[in-house]
Length: 181
Image (cartoon, rainbow, N blue to C red; front, side):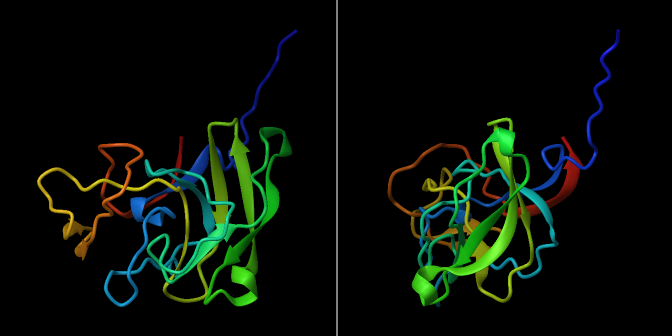
């Protein structure tokens, strides 16, 4: 007797894009009108994994204006699934000016990948500056940079001066297309 195991090529745990930007963290608070703001309006619809060292999980508590380097942060209102749940529908919230108690609801899909990481089926945002949050840790300025201005992704940004979760993070903000992992 033989056991044949077939991997589903459409499993988002195996094929997804990566979003790597430490400023998506709720631990980072941008100053509106001063700091550049993140916007996911041009993000292609698809499955994504947040891979920054500040955390790879969407927050389950309300994010406020300025957090996650955006004016209107998007957070997860419902809990993350277990591995056994498979792909589930969840409610994400856009906090725009604290309307509806900070939750203008939108549907997303989430999958727990063997308790190692989560992937999210994300859609472009309705406008700018509006972006998905991921992680709660703060970032550290790279060596030889002041805490006032740090050059990241073509723009001057301020480094928070508070507690750091991990060191040596990749400071490049980038989108990488879906790939098999």
